[in-house]
Image 1: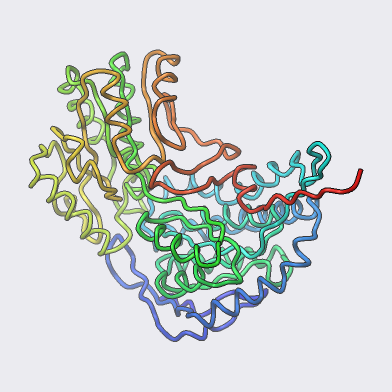
Image 2: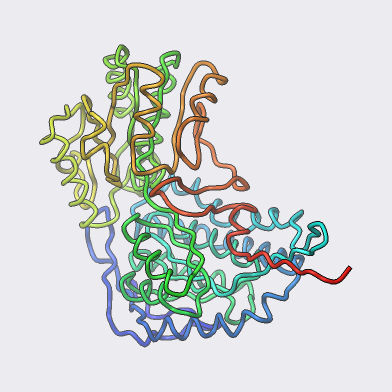
Length: 472
């Protein structure tokens, strides 16, 4: 049994003032594997005070100094990757073969931001004025459970690159991962107060952070509903906010695409991270006259997906994170059936031979874009096949959503795919494959969020532009 009873404030591991305990579960079995002691508002106040005290000196560090810190942070995270991977498998249920490929991304967030700083000019002339890009202050980072180390390292890297100090509130469901990562980050020797981590509930610690006057910016990844609440809370003190929220991403398969080659990639886009991904391509748009072939290709692709214990190196789809999430996804599957969609494969209950929070990989056909399963983010391995009549119709359906985080376009003609991609309302559009460029901006249109992360685009959300005018 794991016991996590420390948080990280002002360069030290301390016992929280909060006394509430939260059970940690193994998603593959549902068994309790440990407990974490949760911080409260007083703990958040102490962390914010430490970050505020550290900010004046840290904001004056040089670009070169901060690049060196980022490289050192990269190295200490690399050193803990094996331990962190074991925690992801045990605590999150991430398949070991899949998660092992993701591990390097957490450490690489630091070197990517060091690279973004290389040619960045914090001071630049603009006609008769001088513009100084100034660190914004204390950043409150609120982290979800579906990629704990990746989000922590990205948000921390961006804040450090900008010269900001940070208070991080990770998900309480990721406490084992957070503890391993915090102890690694401590070894990098950052100045006291630059990094602070407080385990706690979102409606306690996160709520307090979003209202606290000494936090200048909130960087949040999570649900749209919570993002809206953070935005309302932040308005009182005019906090700057970056919100990376939900999605209902379309995968548009054009009529000149090779279904045998395309459909396995489309299924992978929908099932990524066991379906627990804001960018998951859960709406697969197919020409109506190709639908029967598309259904067969999709079923074939899903039948090759290995659903098994996360410790199996061949497993591609693990359990969901919690009983709550399992019940939520079961509710959506039932709703899809009730609203008249055709269940092509999968359905209610557990996959054969598996319990815990495993969900059967599920595909619905005969879905119209007004159905609940096509409108709302499910956050599980549940996909919809939606027919369209023309290219214009496909674009209209793709854009007929409250969200706009990511989209995929598949075509036998790259130029045609690019023309369609240009007309889709999404912060990131992938053409004929699944890609990630860490220097390119990431974020959403519409209710998928505000602002951008990664590279100089993320860096500048942590800076204020100050124009200095002097007598000629």
